[in-house]
Amino acid sequence: MSFVEYGDTIKDGDTAIVFLGHESMFPVKVQHGSKTQTKYGVIRHSTDLIGKRYGSKVTCSKGGWVFILHPTPELWTMNLPHRTQILYSTDISLITMMLELKPGSIVCESGTGSGSLSHAIIRTVAPTGHLYTVEFHQQRAEKAKEEFQEHQVEHLVTVKNQDVCKNGFGVSNVADAVFLDIPSPWEAIGHAQSALKIEGGRICSFSPCIEQVQRTCLAMEEHGFTEINTLEILLRVYNVRTISLQIPDLGKAAEDNSSTGFDSSNQSNQGSLYGILQQGTAQFKSGVPLKEMVGHTGYLTFATKSLF
Ligand SMILES: C[S@@+](CC[C@H](N)C(=O)[O-])C[C@H]1O[C@@H](n2cnc3c(N)ncnc32)[C@H](O)[C@@H]1O
Image 1 (cartoon, protein in one colour):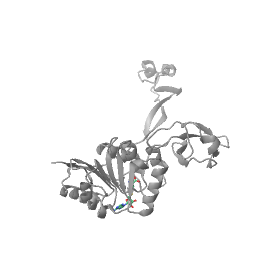
Image 2 (cartoon, rainbow, N blue to C red):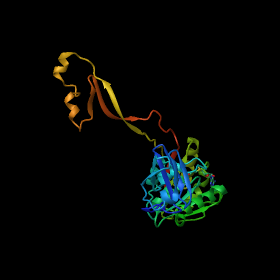
Image 3 (cartoon, helix red, strand yellow):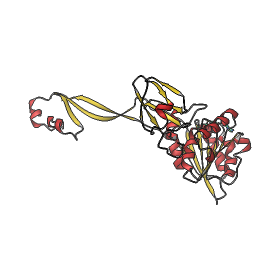
């Protein structure tokens, strides 16, 4: 297993995802002799995990079962230990596309934070690209390095422990793209400009507040960036639900005309979305938005450095 290459079977040292349900999963470091507790009982790594295929249904000691999933950046984002606020997959997907990331891209990032975005960038630029990520908090930088090693992607990433606003990214004229998630991104725009290739590239800055965006846009303009655009992306999730509705009683004449679409002959029609559960009630499947949706995360400001 690695975060950039699929492995069929679970091995000693892998990071696997124990899946109990969509709302309930956690990462586990697979180790000979180790045990993991779940609400369904114990999983013994040597007998229950090592050598089994990813995606297997594993029976726990109390008779319940879980699925063991191969790690991906998206699953890691949902389960990683938070050391900071992190970016989630909705923002990450827009960032990846708008920065035009692809295998071979060279990317600069700051701050590394909890490494949520870093894992997604590494997966996208592998096997020939590279991520230079800068984090001024020493423990966070060290923890990120450790995780990249555990996830077998350390050859694709360089972690630098320094202040990006003072010292930049430690590279110049190499990057295809730069990403900033720091409180004062406007102070790092000059360094971003010089980290990008001479022939140009893309930049993105993530900020929760509009005042940060305003200062960043001005700094981008001052440093010659063009195509400056600020976007926000909002995710709406739907649950599939069976809805039952009362059919109004319109009397015998309406029944005879039967143009309601809820004809009882539909009951035997497997392909139909409608069914009649009992006399007077129609049942159908529908996509229902969740009562609460994720609100504002941050503004994403994109811009281009061009040769001319
Ligand atoms: C919100 S977190 C980044 C989260 C990250 N994007 C993720 O998805 O996990 C911001 C990080 O930037 C770091 N940071 C803030 N200012 C910095 C600077 N001037 N130089 C380097 N790192 C900085 C903080 O220590 C923090 O870890």
